[in-house]
Length: 359
Figure 1 (cartoon, rainbow, N blue to C red):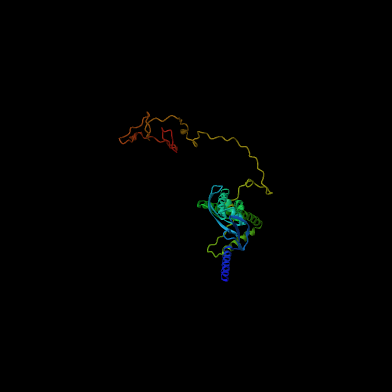
Figure 2 (figure 1 turned 90 degrees about the vertical axis):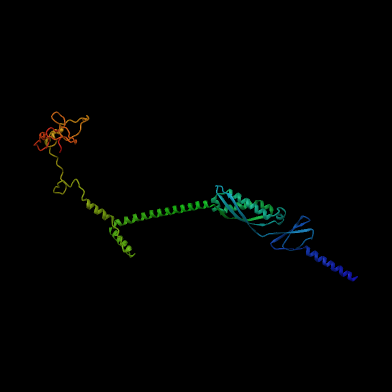
């Protein structure tokens, strides 16, 4: 009888041990336990530590309450200004309601990932390229609001969303590089022009100051010579004053004629007043037939616009009847020594019968 009681006690202890082992659960500090009893949600959420459930009746699901870092795959999209970009991001979220995360959604991680991808595509289409590159903080806030709105019903809280990288086409990168280079060059030119303007103002002030003291220009010349000589160069460059060039130019041109230069001066040194010119007799114009001016034979010749007669041109004088001497076999007019023209003994050197004279 005693042996039977011992066996029964051992059996009960063994069953209790097996039941305890099957019902015992340990919930970690960063987890919460959601109990489903016969498929229905138990009202109490199990806190961290040791807890017991009914084996075969209750099912305990542990939900991680830590912040989850989830990368969002890169999404290809077209911005509002028609630029194709590839954007990837990272999202930070955590579960604030374990029961909703288990009951309201099948897999809250997958749901948050898909929502982040669709929201990222939507935010790309609503933004410009400049906003994606320079105003990311505003885009991050808008993306966070777009993902957080449906995630509230899942018991999930979006902590932060960050756009990680924006990939541009190579052609767009080259265009932006040229634009940046042109902008830098424009700034450099503006700065150089501003520097030249300020330097010109200072130089004008210095020139005005030196013009008051002529010795200052010579001192400046000597300082320039000293500065050049300090370089130990074999060639010494000396600036040549422009005033000296102007002085030499005026000396080469000579004194300018003045009105008072040719007037006689009186005893006081002032130019004497001009006397009125005495009237002279009428000047007879030169006669057009003056032999010393114009040859009368040339002036007496009448010129017309009638065409010349179609006769061969020769150097021989026409005969008394106006005919030319006959030409020889070689085309040269025959010369008759008995018909040699007589020359006029006048100094004009005209031949008789020829109305034109060669001077």
